[in-house]
Amino acid sequence: MGGVIGRIFNEFAVVVTVAILASMFVSLTLTPMLCSRLLSVTKADRDKHAPGHKHDIVTRGYDRLLTFCLRHTFLVFLVFVGTAAGSVWLIEVSPKGFFPQEDIGQISVTTIARQDISYDAMVKLQNQAASVFSRSPYVSHVAWSAGGGNNALNQGQLYVQLKDKSQRPDIDKVLSDLRRQLAVVPGIDAYMQPVQNLRLGARSSASAYQLVVQGLDTGLTDTWAQKLNDAMAADHANFTDVTSDLQNNSLQATLVVDRDKAASLGIDTDTLRSSLYGGFGTEQVSTIFGSADSYEVIMELDPNIEWSPERMLAIQVRTASGSLVPLGAFARVDRTAGALTVNQLGQLPAVTISYNLPQGVALGDSTARIAALKEQIGMPPAISTSFAGTAKTFQDSLANQGLLIGGAILTIYIVLGILYESFIHPLTILTGLPSAVLGAVVALRFAGMDLSVIAVIGILMLIGIVKKNGIMMVDVALELRREGMSAKESIHKACLMRFRPIMMTTLAALMGTFPIALGTGASAELRQPLGVAVVGGLLASQALTLFVTPVIYVYFENFSGWLVSFFSWKKNRPALHAVESGEQASLFGPEDRLIEPQKAAAE
Image (tube, rainbow, N blue to C red; front, side, top):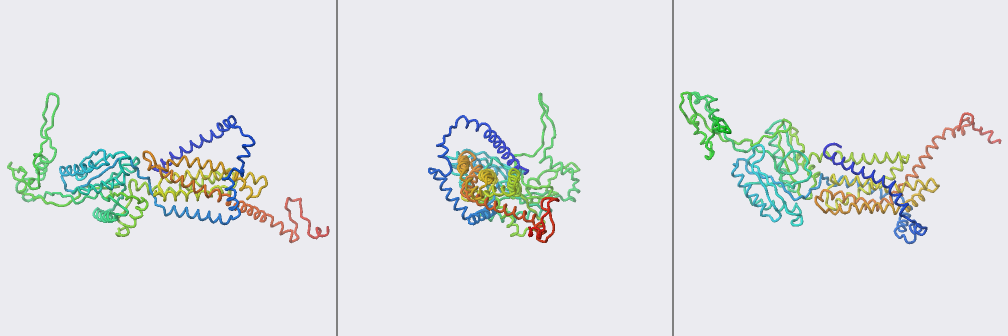
């Protein structure tokens, strides 16, 4: 898997691999040595910890339940099928998310005013918005700036530092209160998003997620981008803080020159351009040389005068005869609406729509809703849309998650098949996975969490833990089968013998991940889905695997026995047919001939 998500999974794989190798080394070297030195087991201890001892209430209870399951194998098999189908269905219907929203105590705010606002007026509005944040009991301090990128004077930024979590509610409640307080500031719109430790995508926007609308025609692109923006803004249940970088209603002044009048006055285009550049440009007219430095002299109009289009027409322009005439004598100013900024992506006109998600709405549901809105407004094929930033990375991760989990399961199956030299027994071990996945997804739904990338990492950890429990049961059962036991007897005894180790390893994993599931500590929101998925999956798999895996083992053993009998019958069938027809045939070699039926009967 490539990209940012691939690097995250790569780090996870490296850490887990190194930890397992280190654990294996300790288990094979240090642990046996310490056991030989420290453990002293008597016959009474062995009898006390033997499976089915009268004081081992838990094991005896498990023995009775296991006996019932092995007597009603078809009922248990139906439970397994229902568990597998339920896990697949829950994965399909569960809300898909990317990374959980963290609460690190910082908020980024983008403010947007009307497009024809001046810089001084924007500064006043920014100051009012900053005052609203400063008065909030949840805010520690505020820093702000006016004037955005691409010469957009109608935009500003605020950086809000919140108080400690113990002194305020969760960040969603804080954002809701701040939005309500900012609504009283007229002439400005504020778009807030919590600052995250992991932010994907280089595109800056007012909200967390971006959708890019592109087309060959600028006017057509702007029209449909605005329609889609309005449709998303009206859908309050799935989107919030919807805005776009489309700003084509800014006031602009166009100087229209009457060329005939200008020619009659002896004014050409170069003279007019030079006069305007001298007043509004940065023309250097002289240099002042000092004792230690030199200074450039820039000619400009008086900056203290508020210049309007009418005042611009009063600018004097020198004619060919040397006299000065006002600009209004041969020109006029037309006021029109124009684009404040022009955005392109890949050399094509582009409009970026940014949006946030309300609390409880998954990113996967919002992307599906955008596709429905495009059909609802009738967007033509000439206009294309694509996700950018975090939303694009989420789309890419969805395409790879199934391949990642499937690849992990296939790898485990191949390795187990090589070790057991069997095609069937690895499947027996993997039958515990559906119950683990079912428990993980149910736990996530119960906790109100999405099936995010972090939750998928937890499910991958579950695959390894649950697989180990199955290996402990099947491995002992195969050894007992070699001693002559039947399939039911061998798996029954193996489960009782490995019941305590399975319980200990599962409880150890539960205790290790339970603090993560509680979600305590800084940035706990990012780690919590992993803990919830592992805890839920372990509980469900422990409750079902101890009964389902033995039943599946019996079914597969019977099936493998049937296969052996079937292929043996197919192999011997030609020879038997030859005997019945009275023909000579060889079963063992060219020298060993079957006795003819007549001679055999006579003898």
